[in-house]
Length: 178
Image: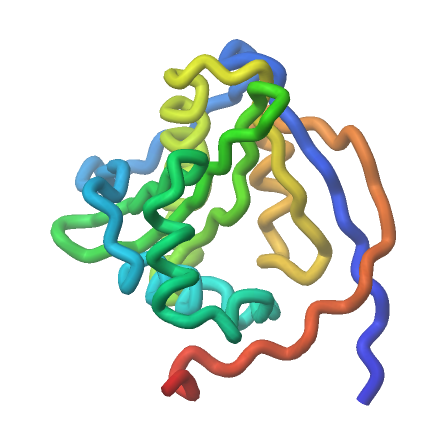
């Protein structure tokens, strides 16, 4: 089976004033930095959230790679919880041009459609701009969740570039991981 190329969008916010915040009716949602780093949790949430969207580029990573990634000064992992249950995950990466990139952002599948996505993104953006980047940017594609692009746009992100990229290879199901 051939996979068609994907449409990739680069998006940005230049400052916090461009954010159009969203707040969930569920006041139990909390977002915090994963500190101290816990590579197994980074791997678990990345894999659980990304499996349905072809986030397979880290499947080959071994423990040392996850440890190095999680401990990097350039990486900040954020976890959204409801009660004590992790429901969302994001990774921010400091760039050499003093910008900040959202590498990963998503919800645990069982919590999609409950109104948490816009609120989690709002909290991640607010945290990101508290570190004073020159800008906040990300890439998303038409293989991510069907509401990803519209959620970013609804929060104020604007498209600054579009390109065609290779298709996402099929990722293993979360439950297939060894």
